[in-house]
Image (tube, rainbow, N blue to C red; front, side, top):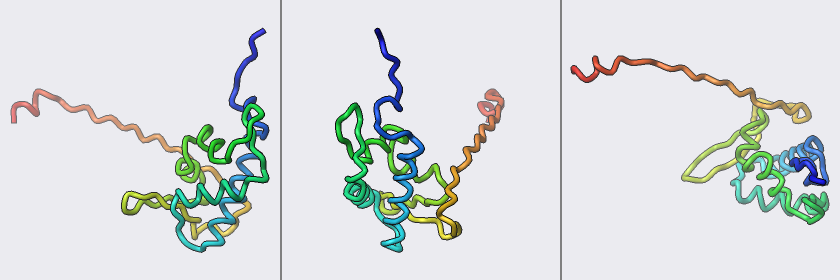
Length: 130
């Protein structure tokens, strides 16, 4: 009998609970440092901080970043998908910080995706005549 495979079947935490754990720990990390943190430092500290959460994939222990990478492709895309975080690029490095404008960290909202596909059709023969 073939079993239907789904991302949620692999992990011992449901997506909502795991996202709450990630937010709680990431907010605490960023508040403790009171500044912008480099992504590699955030990854290391998140892995250390969530060791006791015991994330498991197919029964084998994994780091929390493995979970983030599977669902969001990276910690940067995770941070960019929520209004509470700001991603800053400087000197070919990525940094994450808490938004100063958002005071209530309990109310975490997803960023709305705005599709702005506007096509401008040009008349190619007119361009070639120039």
